[in-house]
Each structure stands twice: as structure tokens, then as C-alpha cells.
Image (cartoon, rainbow, N blue to C red):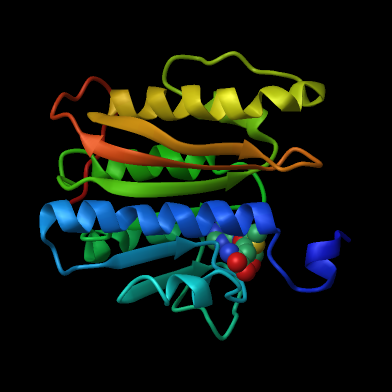
Length: 205
Ligand SMILES: C[S@@+](CC[C@H](N)C(=O)[O-])C[C@H]1O[C@@H](n2cnc3c(N)ncnc32)[C@H](O)[C@@H]1O
């Protein structure tokens, strides 16, 4: 068990990226003159990040498959995206704070918001085993062996460009950093609708 898990703390590098990514939404809010400030936190767990997000956002929606006190929607991220996301579409910030590879969920998410989410937003992503992202890309990204984990940052960026473009969005990287020891990547992107939709299928209904 790692030091931070053992002492129930958030890795300082991760915390720095998550908080600064969340604060980035203030720029979007000012530009839009919007009072809505909704955060969706997928994989919210027992709420180490939730308490920080509540200092920044007026509303934090928490989702986790496990039954923690902190959790409002006890379901998988996939189930939330399929059935509940449409009720929270005014979000400004969404966090995929996964322990594994959220490739399937990210692709589903962009297919669901395609043509529906008009305002820019910030997406924050945590992932490990990111070589599996390639399985969920539209344009068959190259798969790297786990020994090439130092390439996972780049793979995530290519994946994001791929799924955004396919669903009519652009992504601008804000942070993209691999944890000092290990394979975990923390990244965030500003997402804007382009209005051009190339591939993908669903859309919220
Ligand atoms: C890295 S922790 C999240 C930590 C949390 N964000 C925090 O700051 O305390 C991962 C969490 O993801 C949850 N989880 C794992 N797979 C999931 C899934 N498919 N859908 C929703 N939650 C999931 C686990 O139950 C666990 O609580």
C-alpha cells in the first residue's frame, strides 16, 4: 500500500492538478457570465477530493459504484453517463478520477454529449493501464506495452484528440503529468464544441 493511501491523503501532485484544473473553470464562468457552477465527480470514493471541490463549486455531484456516505449516485460511471448525465448537462467541470483505464467511459461520455453540450467545460482525468485506451479509440491508436508506460501521457492526449474530433469537439491540454513513481497519469483539458461531427453515434436523448 502506498504512503498516501495508507495515510488517507491525496498525492500532492494530483491534488495540485485537480484543484488548479477546477479553478480553471472560473475563466469559463466569467466569459459566459454564468452563475451555474456544477461539478460532476465520477469515481468520487470516500470524498477526499469532494471536500476540496465543494470549496470551489456551488454544486458537486458525486458518483461511485461503492456505497460511501459521500456518494449521491451509487452506480458505475458507465451507468451514470447512460442514465443520469442528461439531468446534469450544465456542468462546467467533470472528473474521471479512475483507478484503472477510463477509455470506455470517456468514449461513451463524448458520444452522449455530442450535439448537446454547447458550452465549454473542463475535463479532468486520472488513469493507469492507459495502453488500453487504444481499444476504445476511433482511429486505432498504437498500443504500447506496459513497459512503455512513460508514453502514457502522449497516448492519453492522442486519445482525447481522437474522441473529441470524432464527436465534434476540440480539446486544449491544461495539464498532463505522470506520477513521479508509477504509471498513473493526471491530465485535464478544456473542451469546446466545434459543431462538426465526423463519427460517433449516440447523443443524449
Ligand atoms: C481512485 S479512487 C477515487 C478517489 C476519490 N476521488 C477521492 O478523492 O477520494 C477510485 C474509486 O473509484 C470507484 N470505482 C471503481 N470503478 C468504478 C466504476 N466503474 N464506476 C464508478 N466508480 C468506480 C471505487 O469504488 C473507488 O471508490
